[in-house]
Length: 322
Ligand SMILES: Nc1ncnc2c1ncn2[C@@H]1O[C@H](COP(=O)(O)OP(=O)(O)OP(=O)(O)O)[C@@H](O)[C@H]1O
Image (cartoon, rainbow, N blue to C red; front, top):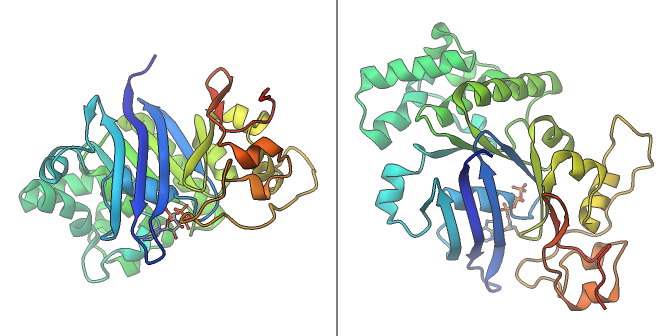
């Protein structure tokens, strides 16, 4: 059995807002194994980015509370001093490709400089060695030396995405969080980037957390899938169980709302929209939208039931609950 490289226990993130505390991430627990890809899927606003940024302790100013535990290779890192976290964990052990990052490249700095920057800024490396390392990693993601000396506007979307992947890898982390890494790209480029991510994972022995709202993309890369709804992980299972035997009402309805190659089923969108996280519904947070709703779902929050080997869901469907 592979080692656990990342483990979350009841990780919770609460923001201050004018209307009151907003629980963007609630009691999230999971483990990530060495070499594994865990996809996190869910609708916009369900807390995927808050979870990802929270793991890297990149909190907004209006953070009210971040609680629970985050273990990286057996060290609990949520309670570390910021200075120690910055020195020993962020970027060097775990890094992230941010949503839309390719559009935030600095237009007036050469690519090689932008990739080398984390080494110079965070690790005090001198410029010549940092540039050498940046060129090596750029080469690995498929950007040749001549392109390394160019500016972002001279690169295509796919190439810019390769650059931001290089930025996340240059500090040699073994865990990488990918937040919608292919969302702004055309389908061919998306496929190329997915292939690149697979190759890099193997060559560098990486573990990925892959965040997406697109469940077809998740199937490309994921060993396991975690479904997020209203700040919570509501189901987690190996990918094939996620597709073939979903156990949560939300996952079932989510899968029925998107086309698949295998079947010609009639698509059915999920009515309504995700709830307010300031004042979420009682019981199961999905109950107001769920076509399988039972009385108990309105009254009592479901626990995380074990549905099958490695398959857990916070849902009363199929459970006796009298
Ligand atoms: N700094 C903040 N202050 C207050 N509320 C916030 C803040 N950042 C995010 N939120 C709220 O937290 C919830 C979760 O947002 P988050 O961006 O994490 O979701 P998401 O699933 O990543 O969505 P998307 O796919 O659109 O990025 C949303 O209700 C959002 O409005």
